[in-house]
Length: 299
Ligand SMILES: C[S@@+](CC[C@H](N)C(=O)[O-])C[C@H]1O[C@@H](n2cnc3c(N)ncnc32)[C@H](O)[C@@H]1O
Image (cartoon, rainbow, N blue to C red):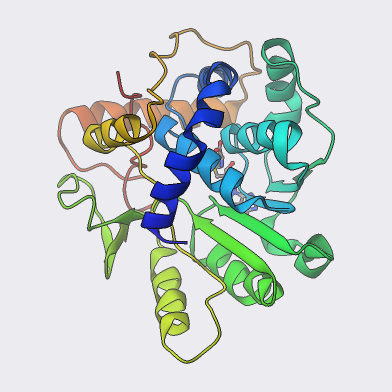
């Protein structure tokens, strides 16, 4: 699936996504609120793009690599319960989802938040992927945990199990230079062909895609989708194409989540990064650069 296919899917499924707009909006805002307003891991434009992708591809299995606060998890569970009946295996070492995200979502969007969703707490590096895949024939993977070690596990252990099955691997946090020609200059971007990112896995991803795209080998097991995020012009383009506008700004209230020491320290780091970001200086996150996702939603 390339960007034209995604655009077609957006147009085709816009009415259904628009019908779900109120629920999606609530989930988007709620997961943002639970992230202590540090910014959504999955911006609104990604919610729309991923919704279209799910409705078009109709996976029987969704594998989520990196759950965190669970924005993507809630989106997957929503569409799975409403339309897809997909099995979801969500992998993360954090426990936020079960500790306080699900209890909060249960109050805001009535849905079966357990059924079909295996939200595992564990290391992505340690998983038995053939067992997870089992007999699934249509698999969508959201790859949203970062670094070279995880890239090794994905490429060497997960992707081989996808061969022979219909599959899409969505590599989050990759931008497409053809649509984002002027990246923020204060961020230390890594480039690989048309892709650029702040995350190190861009290297192995680019190499994998390049190797698989060379004819005559079989169709690639991986499709890289640079999901649109951050840049207002892009979001506006999504809105005009689909008629689905961004939700209003999320309320700036702190959630009642337990504040652990690591959380407090991470939040202090994020606040410092935002201050530095506003000052136009280079800031670092994960040893490279701040996540471009920590932006305010489009107004
Ligand atoms: C960017 S967040 C995921 C955000 C999520 N997709 C969403 O939409 O809210 C990445 C998550 O991956 C987790 N993670 C990173 N490395 C991991 C590993 N080796 N095993 C399990 N989880 C890992 C982090 O703890 C973090 O919660």
